[in-house]
Each structure stands twice: as structure tokens, then as C-alpha cells.
Image (cartoon, rainbow over all chains, first blue to last red):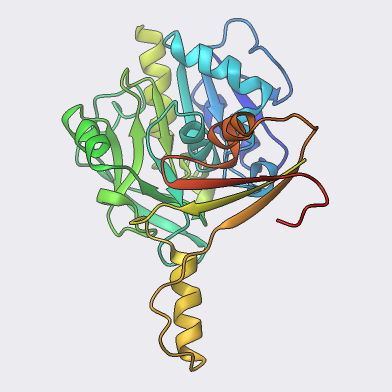
Length: 222
Length: 82
């Protein structure tokens, strides 16, 4: 199994994301944003957290126009798996691979702390090693994690069971406490909390590890 | 040529920065500020002959996220005051 982890100027969770994938058995290749194609044989693309392009204009907006993102959109369009975390989630929303938008936290402040999440659906390649309704603790660290979507979009997410995670104690004002959403084919996940920062006991918790092992299991089964 | 693009959050979209500015103005004693919206202004210097339609396309593709933001474009010849 091979994972590609993208690197933008300003990415700062790229190596952590690579560790998460490696720990679950993936071979990882780092891919610079100026590349126009993904390496051959990639099973999943990781879009890491950080502050691509310094968050200039809007979070993720400039990264969404990077050469590599056209290849990622084509990969997702063919049914490839993509995981976007934090700034990666913002990038996936800016490319419209995922619906909605991440806005400034409603409390304005940067929020950095372990957060309790509820696994809203176990029916996805990223969450099947959890159980629906499981409570897990995963860190958040963001200034713009306030997920917003219009009524029709929210209805679609709910009726299609595409809300992956919700917050126990909403830290940013996200609509319907949404912390992570899935694409219509369930193979793209975007989430603000950082599962890659909870894969080792030294991190203070290992609740994020099951996300990577879920994905490994789903890819082996496929 | 020059274009001035004004990007604002759409009406009804919560603007936490605008709300913070409004609250600060109130605590400074400026009464009667019933709303503050914070947006951004982007000035583009353009080759002669660039059309407003092209600037609109720039807005749709990059400068504004039309899910939450509206934009307004004002075109002018260089030297002309906007």
C-alpha cells in the first residue's frame, strides 16, 4: 500500500501524517506541490495540516490552485482515497472536492487542545475500525475551523450519512457540530482535528491510530 | 488598466471579525454602530484590454469563495482616480 503526502510551502504536519500512514503499514512518498502528477501506484493521498501559503487570501485557497491539486482532483474523480486534515480539509473544500467552507472560529481565537469527538458513522474506509457513537479524543489546532454549509448541503450530508465526526464540545462554531465530512463516494475525508497527532502513547493518546488502520484494512479488502 | 475588487462575506454569514470590531467600538464609547462587516480590497494592475469578464473569472476561481463571499469589481484606466 502506498500513500502520497503532499507538501506545500507552510505545511507543518506533513511528516506527522507520514508517520501515521507508515505506522499503519503504508509506504509513504512525499510529493512537492509543484509536481503535476502523483507517483505511480498510489492508494491514498494525504493533504496535511499547516498554513499553506501563510493562509493568504483565504485558508487553503492558493494551495487549491497548486499544480498537484489538479492531479489530486483527477485521482479523487477516479475513486481514489484522499485524507485532508486541518489545512488539508480547507484545501479540499476550496477545490470543491468536499462541500462547505471553513471560516474563522466563532470565538475568533486560535484553539489548540485535545477535543472529544463522536464517531458519527462507522460506514467509511476511514472510520470502520471505530464504532458509530464511539467517543474519541483527538487534538485540534486551528484558527479557521468553523465549518459552514447551507441548508440543502447539510440535509444532503445527513441523509447520505456523510458526517464522519462531530465535536462533543464545539470549539469553533461549526454548523451541527461537524468536525469531519465524507465525499459522496465516501472515499474522501476532510476533518479539522489531527488524528496523526494521536497515534503514539507519547502523544498523550492513540485514538487517531484507528483511522489509519481502518484505511489500511479497507484498502487490503478492496 | 486597474481593477479594484471588493470581497465581502455575504449577508447572513456570521463575521466574527466584524463582530469583534463592533464590540471594541462600543467599549470605546462610540455609540450607535449597529453593524460592522470586515472584508478585503484587492487591487489588480492589468494589461490594457483586459475585460471585466476576465476579472470576474479571477474572482470566481480564486479571489472570492462564492459559497460565502460576494465580490464587486470596479475597472478604471490607470491614472484615473477610482
